[in-house]
Length: 535
Image (cartoon, rainbow, N blue to C red):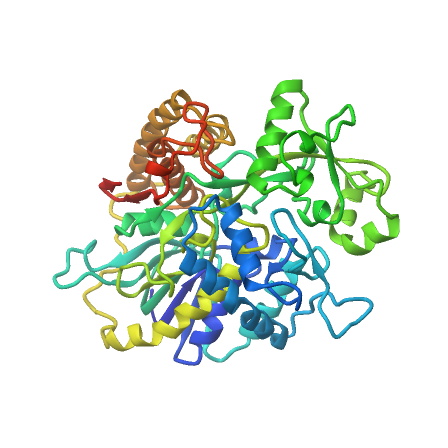
């Protein structure tokens, strides 16, 4: 089956739906999402959107906090754009009906909270379920729009580009091949503009706060068409994910520490004072390494986030989602410290993007966690992620109409449909399941919070072999969601390993025992990987 749209959006989180809503003014839009439309990292974001709304706060202060957290690898021009354009984008969400929490004393003002690394209260939130509120608002605005068509349970396989097809003329993205996971048919989607907004890649690691959809699909697809991939060594581990045998990936929001939560060892010692002047409000990379260090030193399986010294009514009122979820596991955060461990949370690297979401490949744009704009540097400041998705999806929508003008008017009839060749159904699905587990375990053990040359070399050898085995399965077997996701996490894992091996210093989220110090002579640059090239 063939489809033709003016715009194709891969992903249904904050970046994808923001872009889709704006591009619907210019033509027909297909939103392709591999699960249900609400199944995105955005939906699970708890904390909020960091933006300057308090008259006592300043853009310069937010910019400096972002650059400090990013360990001075941020692109200053991008940081300023994002911070200064943030308030306008937030007001657009409010206009859509997103119900952010209001100040109890003055409901005409938004309630602003503070999170780690911020010098002021500037995090706009909807209690502790901000992502869900934003996602619901955007879904409501897009799902009945006459120019937007959703394709749920459609898993993108690969981008279609002129160069990959061996077509003459300048390279251009023409669309995407997609597996309909309900019918198992492979469909061809052609579009004048393609937006990559597939989210993050937390499932590359064994322990993650991300939902199952976060398998790095957009990053892997962009790499395969030759688009540069930037700074993949900087993977953020959220310090506070619930440690419980029945909890799969539940995140305890950073706002808990912002409102006074204290990290303690099993013996009750508040250890963050031993690591940083900001104590429990230190940037995430420092907190995650501190927890990892304490667990390794003591042999304890977790540490604890203590909220018991705070007013019980305040705790439930501010964190109803966290409280309700913890009660399901028999943990009353009003009276019992919460057992937590770090887990893979956010990809600070990604697909190369300029200030307008352009990847360098004509017809292909990127926004949100899939992208590398330069905003986050070596470590993302809390609650800057939803902000980035809003700002740069909007900016991409300002240049996309011109891309549509230069696109082939006939959607290029020379693009062939998918050829399954001699692929057969796999007779041993256990091979795919085992490779999934092996890839995620080696990433956790060797390419996690603390790294070394020896661990990275071992990870590199295993990842190369796994990618070769997966490549054989990809061409020999009929495609399934599990195989496609395995192919993508294995590729993204290898990109993280190669990037980490190239950075011969410690900076931000990349900490290696072999190069524990900063080295500005070599370190104040981006790590760039491109298919067949690295620099």
